Image (cartoon, rainbow, N blue to C red; front, side, top):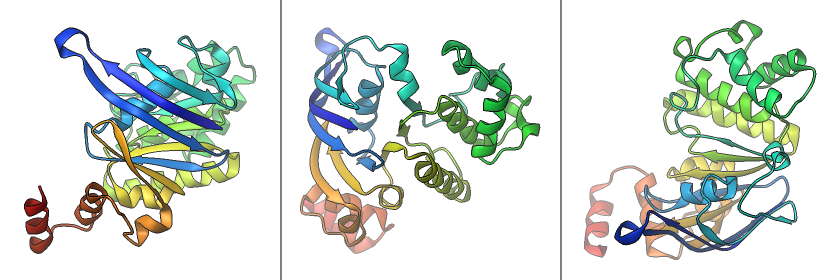
Length: 258
């Protein structure tokens, strides 16, 4: 469903130009959930933005469902692929009701049965029809992120790009949103690319994981290898150790390694 080959992304210009993503390659099968994990600034979110068309200044090949993607994306591309962003407080228009937020993509794509589609979208993410005319400030963080998921799902895409969809939420709410995304993937045969710095989230959601550092993929692991801490690269080993919480001896070893 998704093939990325030698993706390179440059940001900025002149002396401020940064080589943010370096020769990244991976494949994602139809119906699979693929994880990109790494610390902040490792380039993982930049990969998502290049795939989605938000970043145009890149080289390499991006194939979506067998079609090589050029610089400009047509309307059919965005019906097939949608993105859920990290911050539910920033991704929704503060002066638009939930109804307006969900109606807008339907108007852009000229889809009919608007009333039915909005009701179904809200039901799919566990929100009742009474949420339809509320504004973002009247919703909790978890409810906002459910609306963001509903907005992505209302076009019935085949691919969702998930950019740290739970990192801005409380731990208990994170679990609810992750379970929702898992159910939606199964029910709608969706393909996911999930970006996160949280190895526990990636191990729960994804079958295959790529670890990124300084714009490059340094290691590819399966879900089982993550759970069993079977990493070979020192950087991945550090991430795995850090994900288990603070330990004085582990911290001492990592300081010696660095």
